[in-house]
Image (spheres, rainbow, N blue to C red):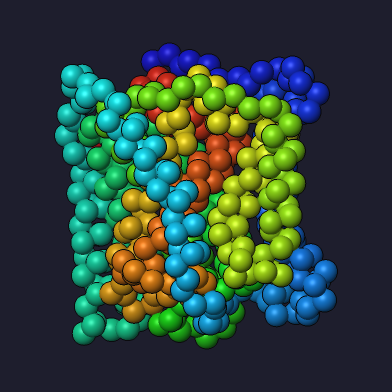
Length: 401
């Protein structure tokens, strides 16, 4: 079977504010690594800079692995709740418009046989869920059930995508998909580091004999985050109403990349100084930084699709993370090793452990996941992650079903 050539980014940028390589393929990997490393360094260092500028001691933020404990925050306030609900309401309205404008396609789905490994995933997920919530089972079993539970989910979602479309990340972009697991572990440890400054969540039911033991116990479940979002994203692509382009093209000035970078840098530096007021920047500031750096160093991001009115690259991964977020909170609710929330101003109207408004944080988180996935795709495959099922049936080997 012939293989089509990977998508190549533009050789040069028409605007001096955007850096671009004259030989894109030869520099794509090195620049992707640079973006990943520079983003990680800024996320780690900037809150420390803010704490240092505020004249506060740094030692408590330098311990590794970071462990967050319960910290009381400002009480619930209706003004904050209403103001922070407005962006969430706007996003819900956009999704509603997109779905209602979407076309219900008459095209038939692939309707392939559900693969055997999909049934394995369903079985592992069901057994793990039972073990996680069953209080009579040994505590050591229940403490380590998160990883098999989400591994089963990842297999199941890939199988569903394969059955409905004839394509899945696991079977058709295997190297990229497997690379997401170690990247995901590092990715979430950065959020654990940021959480030291805002203390929005903390854990209970964990038993670790040493810091190294805690690191290993945490890294395994952390490594399932990006693959879970990617698998859910692939499944969402099988729904015709989520595959349409209901909005007008949107164009931005190249200087916006520098503005986004500056805003992200300032916001991250300030979360350690005003954690209650800026706690939402834990999710928004890294998104601004990674998007800006990718635009400045690579000359493009997946958001370039917005210029053609293709909002799927934003809406699909955001919705995928929200779905995963609901399941994270659901399965966390009855588990022994679990997390709890302490969020200023909006700590009310809980759905499981999470305050209702907290679910809005999964939307920018999903977009950030997509950007990191894109950088990994450029590193592994030398082309953009979008569209997620690019060159379906023409590249990579499909595993037996």
